[in-house]
Image 1: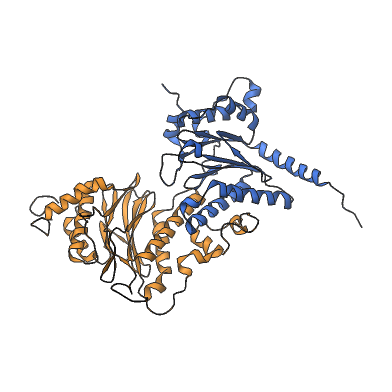
Image 2: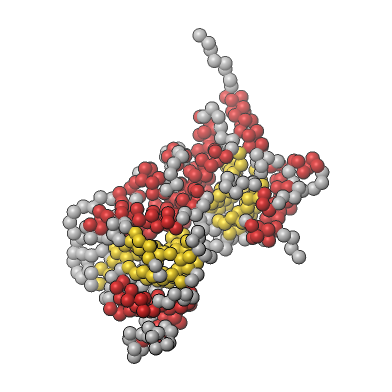
Length: 290
Length: 237
């Protein structure tokens, strides 16, 4: 390993060589051991002992919804290791640059590392090129990273992110979904990933309305997460005892904004109140909007 | 057999230094001014694509004068240094001091070993939580480092511009005041002095301006262009 400088303190020759604007490509040549994909995986299973001990913590449900001004992404806060709750306040929705965010499902440790590398990748390109990477470019970079993890995915350590952002050229919010092989597909209106995604998707189909504003979209995202938490044991609902709310990010032309807890709390309370005595909630068919 | 002429080491170094200094003095100046809201960088540069001022990392920026290909090379190396370091350690472990050291060693080695020295002068600045913790390092073609306080001017007419800054700079300036001072100083170059009619006005579209904004979280660097820049340059009242 030859980080940052050689014996004389000079910048290493590799730093001064003209080359790629990709951080990953640069590091793969210069110091491959810091990249996640460089580590070979030995055969065998993780050591056991106690409930959940043989499992890597998994992250679960993410929802993303396009609205008039951009896109909203929300994720619950639970990570599970087998039947055990590994973490109650994990963050699964990350800002990746000024106009995009990513949510993670799958093996939490690998996914968080992938997003961290993705963030540096986007920032590095932006600084070297002096311009923002296109939305398509970002989505493709993430696709390449997921494909790089295919070996681990085949052994059960899959990572499936959800990418969303504001496309400055097209002037609208966009969502890109992935599969474990890195295959990507643009999703219209809304998309969900993770173990609770089927329940969240059902809820979104009933609650989504074209032309919703930001506040309505945040409310719909929280309703969908509630439905996922209601039926999927690996998805956590809002934790009213510990005051842990879902992480909600909003991307518009003005950039990424994480909705602060103080703003989220009344919305969560309204979701809970709306379901008291009526656990399915109100999809708005009776004329009352969600 | 021909015997090479003997050139004393003093003469050799002096020739290289003169050569580098001449190259640097030919270009337009860059000024760096610390203020209450952060650190302001300004340069007269009509190009929108070829920058003299750039972001290195969250709180660190880079400004340079001299030969474009040479300082661009150093800038790219600095971004790589910062991103590799920040990725393998933590974002808070990337400092201007570390980068300034690496630049100093690099420039020093090039100056002594290569036949042609780099014709560049650079500033590496880091904005702190308060003005007392700001760090501004100025590096010259031979790898010497100076720890500057308050303001720096480099490039063509650096002497005249520094004199103006020394006369007018004070701690605790606002962003607008610091920027107006920077532009006035850039206009007080040798040509303006020769004309004897005070500082030369510089239009907003001829300026490259950026700030390390103390109030921002994470990435503090932002370029000031268009209406924002025009608003800051407009006289108050």
